[in-house]
Each structure stands twice: as C-alpha cells, then as structure tokens.
Length: 190
Ligand SMILES: [Zn+2]
Image (cartoon, rainbow, N blue to C red; front, side, top):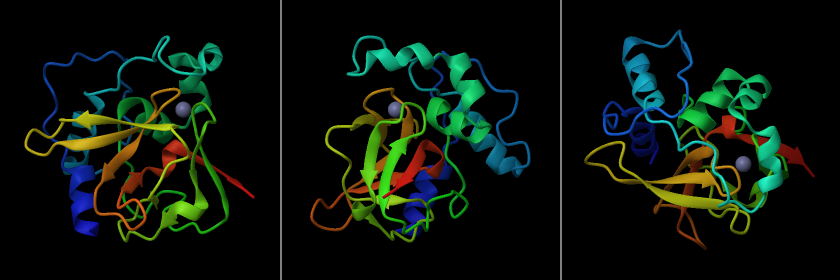
C-alpha cells in the first residue's frame, strides 16, 4: 500500500500539455528537492486546479476572502502549492500523517470540515488517510495527469482545494482510502 500511494503521489512527470496554466506559477515551491523531485513538482505545478470556482459551491460568501492573492498571503508556500496547484507533500513529512489527536480536520483554505479523526486510519503511506469524509464536503474528480494511471482526485467541495486522491483499498466500512496531504488540512482538536 505504501509503495502504491508513494508512486501515485510522486511519479507525476506527465503533465497535461493541453491544459494551460490558470494560476501564476510560483517561482519555486520546493527549491531543495532532488532533480527528480523538482521535475515532479514542476509537472504538477503545470497542471493547476481550475481557477477558483464561481457559483458551483455552496459557500459563495467565502470567496470574497479567497482570491488567489489572499490565499498566497494567508497560506504557506507548501499549503498553496498543494491546495491550489495540486501539489503533493513528501510522505512522512506532513503535520498529520501520524496524528491521533481527536478532532475535526478542516480545509486549510475555507475552513470547511472535511474529515473526522474517528475515520482516520494508519495506511502506512506517510500521508493522513481516512475512510470517509464529512458529509458531501469532499468531492471527487477524475485525474488523468498520469496518462496510463487514472486516479480519483479529492477536492474540497466548497473551494476546490486539492486535497489528495481516493483509492479503493481502504478499510471497512467504506473500502475507500482518502490519501490526503497534511498541508491541505487544519486539525481542530476536540
Ligand atoms: Zn475548502
């Protein structure tokens, strides 16, 4: 499981040339990576999420404070890179991969509750993993950024923040594994 998720999250060297960049590129999100990593980062950075949605999300009011400039100011480079440019943090480095504190994990961008700690499990992947999101607050989208490896992207349903990916090898009762970047989350302990 660890190998699969690692590969899925890092071997993103096939960017989608048909997609033009809708977001301005950061100078360098992670300047100290190896050349292999830098290639992956650049590739992922070249396939940003769609621009901030308009009208399709339930919490439109939040958009006022969610302009790209606001987010750049408010988020760390890592958080911005992951959530707005579909980046992936390195395994076993995120804030929450091994956290067992009870609470609710919220979207780092718009504060929507996304995952409950009671649904978190140890996937061995080095990323926080959950078997079920909160309500309909996480939406899925087909991700073809790796040509021969279609994946299911997990996004915040309110602000379209990229969270991670969903796999079908999770535990009961859902059988789903939401493999999520810590950088997209903010834990509010209970
Ligand atoms: Zn959000």
